[in-house]
Image (cartoon, rainbow, N blue to C red; front, side, top):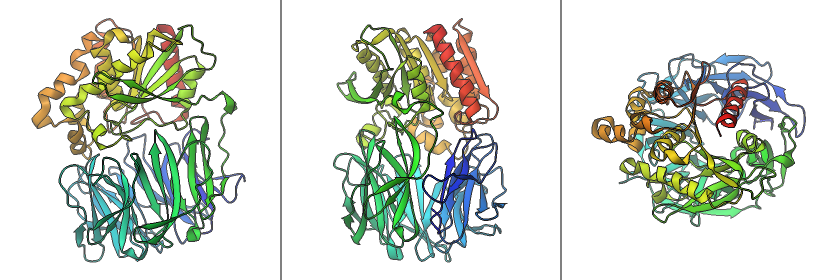
Length: 579
């Protein structure tokens, strides 16, 4: 929200996400950017009618920063270094400068910069040697909170004095500990964040500038996903992840570790996030979604919890009552462990055992399939397919121990979870066990290919979207800035090459018998397009039906509406022919 209460948000009604603004609830929004590429984020200045947004080219993830004047609509390019990534770090408290992290000096590491809002040359304030992000200016504007990621489950937090360049390490620790969602508290005296330093799940904590860590709120056996603190008032919002749904809590700091709770906001959908505080923190904007509730922005009165819907995103004429809410289920895997999942049956499915199923596997693997609005899932359901979305071992949302159950040499245990999911489906009266499809994106694409090679008799077809076929070539060719983080999860090329080769689906592609559809973006910096090309060629050489579609203007995923329509219409046509 802007300093005058105006709301800025991203809307993809033109086919790609662009910046729009809105002055009051339900009013007609005004489109502010008009690009062919999707805008990645937007952030209002705290003091001026202007905002910064970020955009890459063709999905290459080399985000550039731009400033938009809210009155004239003039756009000023701030970075203009198309070969480098720029990761937004927030406005200064006076709105006269901003911070970001970038790999412009060395592609493999991220430095920290502070730049004047006019777009003058950025000042290098910290030279990094790893994956650093900026978590914002202190309220007095003299310091920056910066985080370093050693892996997805291991981070460190520092405070950087901007003028002197002195960096203070606040989180020395042994083993893997998460410190994330870092926000400054009032008076520039401490940071608030979520951590699993003393728990299997993430808890809300206060981290003093001397390094003392105090728990503010426990998760009660569930993760506290994140926290947002208004650095002037001390008002805060934090969410607790319960079976993938979240519980949004709002309050005000009554002491360093004491929160005076406000009424819970009355919001639909079951998922809310991306809190943006308005002037004086009297209200805040939040994105609200659910599997049957398409994403819109609500504005909440902080002290009362009263919520009002501001945006009116369309459902493209599809009646909302036709959307299907998933059932939260669990199935037992090979070692007796209960694997959580979402299960949805198409409208009209009966118990005649004739319903085909798509087992839709999330990426990451450090991620979680949650019941947010998913147009693609609803499309599959409308075409008569049931959908099972497993959170196999290694997924987040179920505690630290669960996330490590698929590390390196235990990688294939998560594939065994997929086999257990298919066995569970066999007991569902509506399901046809001979018509089960494996589908997934990114790491989920690897899971599809691994499932097809490990258990070829289980699958009627596979759909691999930007997936990993060969861990060796993937690690060799992924973006320089990502390799170390990915090796921390999968194993290193130097130490684990033989193991990586042994689990790479490309080396067992002769076992794939199910028809395969492969989707990829030509500009993908995470999983290079060669992964798609090599698996499609190899599987087709064994006489298996393969369809390969590469989009020249996409990266790690299919984001543009016209491409998504083409891609997933072709996928369903492919499945209808073979399943």
